[in-house]
Image (cartoon, rainbow, N blue to C red):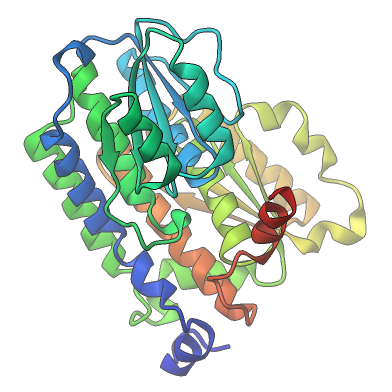
Length: 350
């Protein structure tokens, strides 16, 4: 498959997933402004921690949220299960996030949260979750990308969630700062478009190197949650085995596994998502780990975050991963849209 030929996209992307990926910058900008205008109850101000219940893309949005708010002194907890954590109290903002509104784990967690004093809010496009929220008088932030598959609506869910939390926690994300972040994202996204040849397109270049490999994504600090996002996008878009790990933990265990099985070393491709804003000691760990990978003959690539702020680097890197995983799907001769195995499990559970 040639990524520089239009026929490739016409053949393998009949549902137009590329067009949805291109909406990521506008999703982010729109959702942020919607959150700033959302009518929040006055007693939601001054919360001390955030607890998010969600699965899949909704939980990834919460992981990203934590990367932004915890350095500002606001603890954030993500719960990917049927219950709620015991830390949920009157000082908490509880967010039940489900794109469809029908995620059974999130519905269960929301039902349990009703017995607590936490300030509650629902983020969804509708479904049973919206019905239950209306029934109990819980504010609903309605996601605008109703028709999108959840993994292509991350801009809505993440920036909507961040926008709401920024208001109740008084984060330093306002006006011109956010406008510059969105401009940076829009500019960076243009460099990843299918119109840009592989020779000058970072996303196509990564996809070509990852073809035929098991993709393992490393991250640290603000790129840790982004690494998890990349992993899930390689799974869902590219239909390949992919895993993620984080520094410094991986230096205390995973690196001992580089040697064996020797015949499988060439089957892996390590992507190290690196930001200049992480701890200086972690910066050194990237360099040393690269030396080990080179010594063992394991293919790897260091991907540097672009942007002046942590949030800007995160958004640009998310966009790069979305495009790269999409292009890899085409190189694999696969339609990126279907989620056949995910639907198989859902149908069995039903």
